[in-house]
Image (cartoon, rainbow, N blue to C red; front, side, top):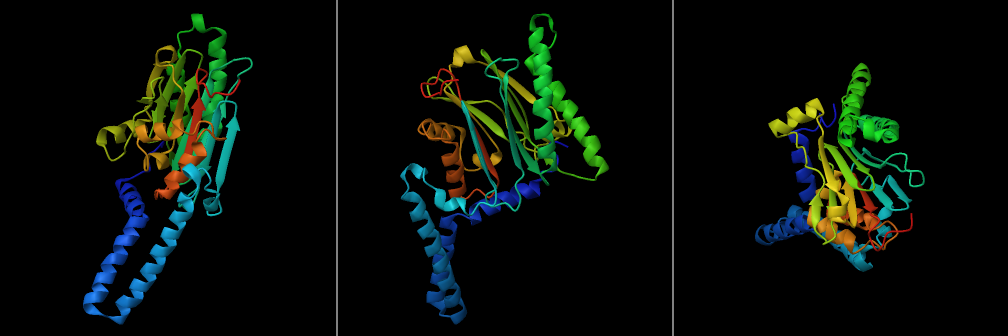
Length: 325
C-alpha cells in the first residue's frame, strides 16, 4: 500500500504541469502566437495574443517582485497563495511545508526527540501521500511513536539485544504497512504514502526509505552525500519492492563524515533541485530562522513545482551554526 498508487500516468502529468507552469513556456507561447498573428492577421489570433501578452506581463511582474527580495528570503508575497502552510522549529531542526499548486495537502512530517534524557535516538520522518492523505496521516501518527517505544526498550539493554536500529526500523515499517493495509482495505481507501525515516544517535545516522522522498547530507567538506535512493514505481524492480514495502536502510558514521546538516524532503523539492544544488542553497542560509528550509521551499515553488513541498533541515552538533542543545 505504501507508495503503491503512483502510476506512470501521474508521473507524466506531473512533468507536463511542471513545464507548462514555467514563465519561459508562457513566453514562448506568446512569441509563437505573435508570429502567427503577423503572418495571418486574424482578429481571433490578435485577441489571443493580447491575452497571452497580458499573462506574460503578469508572470514577469511576479518574477520581478520575487527577485527584488534578497536571496529570495523575503517571499512573503507568495504566502497568501498557499492554501495550507505548516512550519516547525525546535533546537537543531526546522521544517517548512506548503500545499503549493496541488488541490490537497498530502505531505506529512514528524519529529520526536529526547535531547535531555536521551532515552532513544532522535526520530525524523517525511511522508508524502498519493491518492489522498489518509495513508500519510496514518503512518505519521503511528510509525514514529511505535519506533520510539521499541527504541526505548532497545536502549535499556542494547548490549544484550540481538536487534539493531536497522532491524527495528524494518520490523516497524513492515508492521505499520500490514496494519494500514487491513484498516484501509476495509474502508476501500486506495491511498498510499512514501516513508523516509532517519534515526540520529551520538555516533550514527540510520535512514530507511520507501518511495521517492529523499534525504541528503552535507559532510565536513561541503559534499552532498545521498542518504536514500528513490524508488520509482514505473521501474519493475522498484514496483515489486514497493508492493512488498521493503525499505532501503543505510547507516552512516558521524565521526567519519562530521556532517554539518542534512535535508529530508518530499519529492516536490527534488523536482526543482538536485542534491548538490540543495546542499549549496541551504549551506548559504543556515543562519536564517528556518535554517534555509523556508527559502528553498519557496524557491521550488517559484521554479514551477506543481506538487506539495515539505523540507526538513537538521543541523548537527559539530556545525558552527548549531544552536545550543
